[in-house]
Image (spheres, helix red, strand yellow):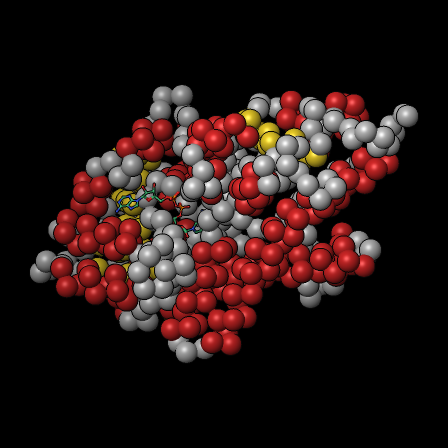
Length: 470
Ligand code: NAI
């Protein structure tokens, strides 16, 4: 029976980095090497002061315990492939920007080139594990590539082992996963490979949480889980539009609905919409898959989850404009939070980007504060979001600052776009005192204005019922 002694992980990103660092921590007898073509990223993982390239609570602690012991980061992809018994493919799979399926299908270029590299380099048998989120039956094409290129005497077993961690809680999720899912071919060799990977996880995950299924079920389960999670958010957001039109309170509705044990309270918070690199991409993937399978009704059903999300973002921008007397031209808006959610520096598909783009197109001035996102990242995201506007023009309208209070000073509106905990502790009394008031506007009007804006943000916990003297 195969026993895994050396693991290689291709892709040192949000998934490959934390996942394999935790494997190294929990399996001191296994040598784990995480490789990436991006030298800057690898250098950051290796930096002497542990300035790792992604912000994730608890991650640095794990890396500190294992790096140099049985955890290594390298750009030498071939060497790591050669030495490993088991290889995770954890590269990015973004939505295709052009060609067949553009805008929907996953771009499998990175998965394919990593797979071809394995085929070209390997001189001994390997278990190849698809960790990236991929459309159904990608393992099949990986197998075709590997088998067509393998040398005599070497065999490749392909497993699907999708990752369910959530950014911001990745380390906690990896320590105590709800489940680990492993898909394999139901052949003797397939099952044997599956057992070898299950044994790795069994070092810290209880046996009953390690689920083994067929390859295609495993691939589809990842898309299904993300689609269902995103669907809850779009459902509650759709209800928030009804609440705003009727005067019902979405927090009360959500609370009441979530008390139903069949529904449950999680993922039922109305917000400005979901972001992140996965939900939209994976649903679009499912839409594409449904269409390729000639299931147009199924495709339309899932597509609506993404459309509702787009609607929620634009509805929010519109509310801001409406609340500020139907124009924001020349007005000053603070945006607190730029990451797509709290406890991460990741900005991919962040709702904040869409909002700011809308505000800029209305020629408002925007001041941004986020505790984790770098200025460089913000400029890059805004340039990409406004491709026809030169960066110098954007910079005339946007200021980036280093504290929430600084961002809120002399503004006409404050938007909380990310639910960072520190925003709960903002001293609203001070903010209020330092805000721009419209002539003749009393504090009740102001408070209604701020509340309208907050109502749509994720931060319904924020208490604005402080006492403001006249
Ligand atoms: P990422 O973009 O942070 O990391 C991918 C890394 O792979 C990059 O650093 C890139 O340089 C490297 N890479 C690409 N091609 C390579 C090659 N041929 N050889 C060596 N390195 C290569 O992406 P992230 O967020 O880690 O996602 C990876 C996969 O995991 C995606 O399929 C995603 O859908 C999935 N996933 C992501 C989750 C998340 O929360 N970010 C959660 C669960 C799954």
